[in-house]
Image (tube, rainbow, N blue to C red; front, side, top):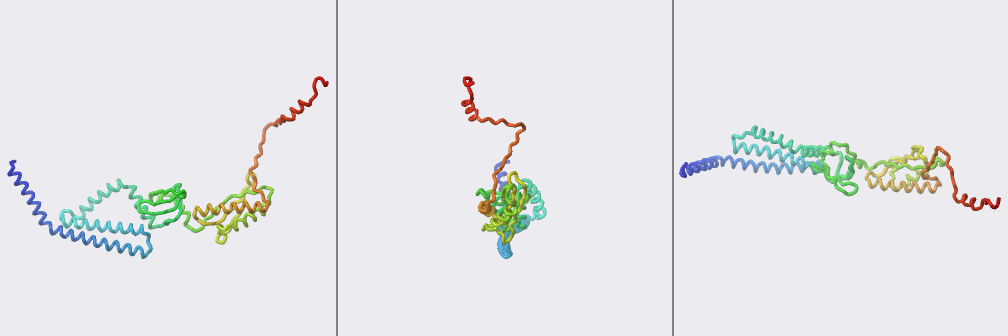
Amino acid sequence: MDYAELTGTLYGTLETYATGFIRALPRIGLALLLILMIWAIVLLVRAGIRKVGRRVHLRQNLIDVFVLVAVTAIWLIGTLIALAVVFPSITPGKALTTLGLGSVAIGFAFKDTFENFLAGILILLREPFSIGDYIEVDGHEGQIEDITIRDSRVRMTDGQLIVMPNHTLFSNPVTVRTNRGLRRTTVICGVAYDEDVDEARDVITEAVKAVESVRDDVKDVQIFAQAFGASSIDFEVTWWTGSKPVDIRRSRDQVVGAVKRALDDAGIEIPFTYQTLTFKEPLQIERAGRDDDQGAAGPTEDDT
């Protein structure tokens, strides 16, 4: 093939492309107009969803999810229509088939991401806990700071931040510590066997009720003799206080201090641990000091 023939072929190809482009200009213009219309629809839908979501008091993250799903669906449908307008050979059915095969491959590649995404939507819809709640899950306890589509941020009680996948929160049992404003707590208090059980119970009850953090106006204070301990009668002291971890620690500190002072004032003994040692054979006790004294003062051979 000589240079003139090559040039002619190239010219013919470019002319064909140019002719096809010129013929497709009306369709391209219509597709661009369709894209502009889709963009306007997206703006209206986004504003409408946000307005309705605020009116029904939905979480902002849940509103964002609805906006994302709606906008994605509108753009997908609009893009397919625009492609069909520009390229008539590409029908929506063929495009959907191609997208379906691609979606299967993407689904396998991003399985964990989609699991967390769906779990995040379900958590936002069901609202088992809210931002600010203290939860315990999978051995971790902390306060919910944020809930996103993929993960949730939990601030541990020691100040560390855990970014927890939503799938973990959705598939594992979650204890919501602050689901209610009150929470029950218990300590064990022992008194000596020589003390009067009824008197000790009354003293402990009055001491616990006098503590400011004890909510005996809502729930009764309960004091029960629980068991015969190794060196004491053990009382189970139960009361209700605030549900936050710091409320529990503070109230326990106050109750333990109040019970100790009340028992001391009443002369009721909180015993130390007693231990009794038993030996199979009698023990011989030797006193070195007495033996030395006897040796020094004992009779000598001259005396006899």
